[in-house]
Image 1 (cartoon, rainbow, N blue to C red):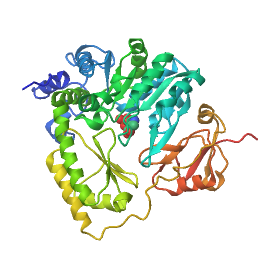
Image 2: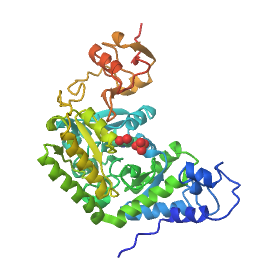
Image 3: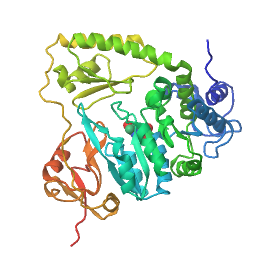
Image 4: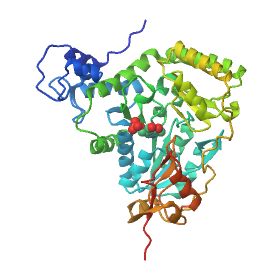
Length: 456
Ligand SMILES: Cc1ncc(COP(=O)(O)O)c(C=O)c1O
């Protein structure tokens, strides 16, 4: 049988963890057993020592591990990130900001993208989207036209896969950006597994730079991410971008887990994923007979249970599942999204199947709405640019006073966390009230909304 490559960081820190040493170095828990029990992994939580390299300096053990990751992913270079995909997105947007003052993004971009635009004073140009099965999906066909129109655009930053597993046609996007000499950046926070489960969908096949949020779909610790580059000319700026935002005290367990996650996925490869997909397919076959309607998207690691189409109230179903030990990733009121990884076992699927079957035998709450996202048909009207709005003096106002005022921040309903209204667009009173009333809205501060101060 083929052997998995040796995870360099993990081996080094494990070796150190089990040696009997007096630790006169950070962190303060000193790797003592009792802390190891409380904070799982504390034995391996070390700092930069003579043998353990340096993430910021890009040398030694960490650099070797990054080179091994890059080779495994087929990238020009890869960078381990311990501050989530967020820090990697900041680094990518920084690199873009050196090449133009605008960036083409879909409205469904993660908040880190909007925050990075704010920091680098870049203007978003929104990529057209369309609705598919109640989800907003990216339409890459107009990228060429947008790039012709927006001369100041540094390029495009797409999300692939999105929160539901939709994957835009990256090939088309890459063709257009390459033709115009612009950047194609990809937020692949949900796509770290695709290199090994569906390589034709993998961001690294098309993008100039992309982030794999390995902690989301590979066996890596929370916050582990890998930012990779295909374009040699970007390397310097990406490295600098990372150094602006990353911690100078990176967690060794997180770094080790980032490397481990990638190597593990390569090792199990498509056969490992096929095992999970076969289990998922069996579940879906059985579910169809029980009137459970699942929707498939390109990323097979996402299973979407369409609750209204199944005649079920999403919230009540989620409560029932959780009481019986089945936790989904999220529910948006229509879809309950189950996120699979290569480590899911048959028992997980059996438990889900049995619980779904049992639920049909209860007096379950039926769907009493179509599960539409609130304000999904809201047509935003822009009054000032995004950059102007996020940098303007502002007021915090109650909903009743927000109608007609210009948003100074981004607001919406989660999950997932993408905005209905972005900075620079005009509030309606109805939207303002719904945002303040909802307990799943974001952007609202203490029942008040941040709006651009009116000039007197
Ligand atoms: C699409 C997308 N991009 C980026 C991020 C940020 O990732 P992280 O939480 O690892 O910083 C998330 C997190 O949920 C996400 O869903």
